[in-house]
Length: 161
Image (cartoon, rainbow, N blue to C red; front, side, top):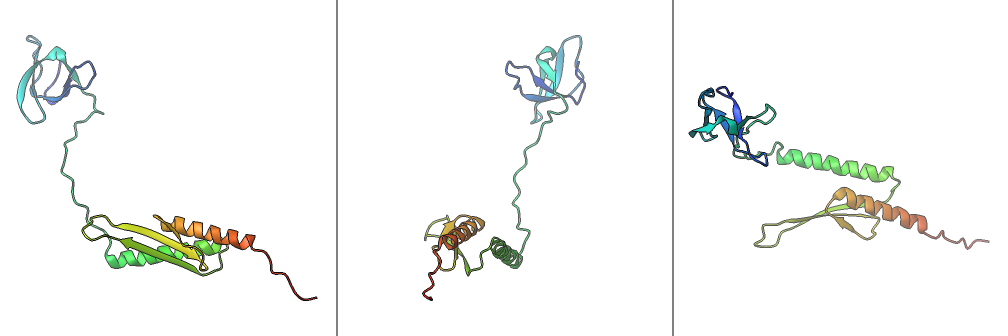
């Protein structure tokens, strides 16, 4: 019924049987199949209690995680961050913000703590700071507030007659 090298699983009610490798062709006379578990331990099993595992259900060997080394040098990261800041300023200008824009990064780590908190702060034209965990969000809110304040500003009344 099974050939050497097949991947089989013992039949269970919920369909989650253990996976085995067929060591030798099934014996039709005795109804016994010689199998190996994933650790290589040999055993025999009743052929009627096994089912062939389809090709899509491959057994994956677990591997230890590998440490991912950073692909960019610190100098390259700074250059890319500068480009990001310039693109944010250009984006604010394209929305009609023609005032001074201030962007700040605030990182805080308490003594003895392993957690570092990073906040991104943006403000336009000395208005109230907008702080969030995302620089783009902080700047978008600051620009929107500035443009709303500018639109709601009462025009000056002329004293000339």
